[in-house]
Amino acid sequence: MSRPNHVAAPRFVQALGLCIGVLALTASLEGAPQPGRIVELHVSGEVDPILAEYLDEGIEQANQQGAALILITMDTPGGLDTAMRDIIRHIIESAAPVAVYVTPGGARGASAGFFILLAADIAAMAPGTHTGAASPLMAVGGYPISIDDTLKNKILNDATAYLRSYASMRGRNVELAVTAITEAKAFTEREALDGKLIDLVANSRDALIASLDGRTIRRFNGQTTQLALQPAGIVSIEMTARQRFLTRIVEPDMFFILLLAGVLGLYVEFTHPGMIAPGVIGSIAIVLALFAMHLLPINLTGLVLIALALGLFILEAKYTSHGVLGVGGVVAMLIGALMLVRSPITGAGVSLGVALGATLPFAAITIVLMRLVLRSRSWVPLAGVENWIGDMGTVTEAIGGREATPGMVFVHGERWRATSAAPIPEGARVRIVRVTGLTLHVEPVGPAA
Image 1 (cartoon, one colour):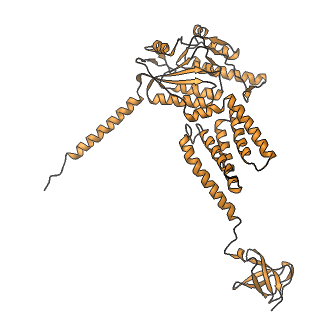
Image 2 (tube, rainbow, N blue to C red):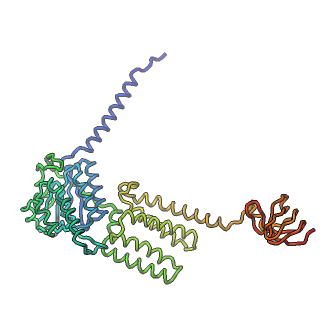
Image 3 (tube, rainbow, N blue to C red):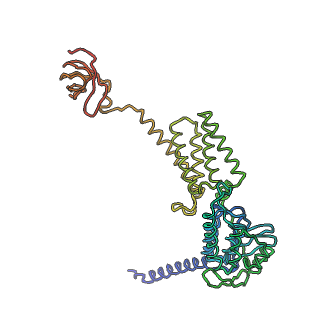
């Protein structure tokens, strides 16, 4: 008889505890600051929701990896206020220090870029660059519009108060910074440094990192941190294919092409009904052009495209288009899904794989179901009283005229109450013309037997 093994259980518990400890240590090391690890992000072009999404995700990823520094290289003429505020919020809340560097020579951090530059833990510029000119503008379709003095003062006061709220916490020259808004002043890199708007001027990225190594900085919450950036391991995070595609749409060249395609497609469809393809292409192009002009927010554009796709699927089921409506619906739903950014449902956005995997089956199911529904409307009932229309019967109780006095009719082995527009005597042959509830409406077809 074997002895029970009293050692196996404790050893198993020890092994399990060791595994849990290793996993916990690994997780803590992933989130801990890694000396010398620098995550580099790029701002090139206008500040829009796609760029804000790219920077927000990059900052979050750098914090999860425990980066020692997040370096944002910038060259922008400005952009949308909402996207700018979203970026600034993530910069301020970042666990890792954030450095914004206006580079290369000839680059600028103007308008919204000026706000972003002053929000960073370290603000730096390369020789031959400039910043400022941050007066807010009201624009429709990318073109400035005039506003009354009251609204103008309201916008200026809101912008200056927003800038002061965080620039003072960063130790910037708030009085000089405000003039970039109220007077639209711009500053060279040397003027910005002398005016205490930025922290340093660096000739290159490597020179910037070398000057920051070992530097003690004051964070937004008042705590001080000493940067350890040597040996410098730089990891550059680029835009995803989805983000590059959406960014391409808002470029001026693409916007012009989309606008022409939309107008021309709708014109051809209205003047030559039934061509279908120009109407489908024009509808999608017009929606994308409205997004490129910033008349439609990105999430609303996505919802409009998905609604358009549903309409195209229904039309595909009803009309013969040889697949043009269906393909157009798939394209519209795919682009619409890719545009759903930072909504309560999709979080950071819908990936291309999920969009394709959901759009194609949904399109097929919708078209098939709609065709079945439309075909069912033309089907003749195979059973029930409704199928008796046209059948013959015999009057067993005389029917009064004008459908006022019902009688009785024997049909299919049963007696039914019946009415008629003309009097019908007992024994006459009748035909059923319609059925209302439990009453048959008949007409005479022969004399009484």
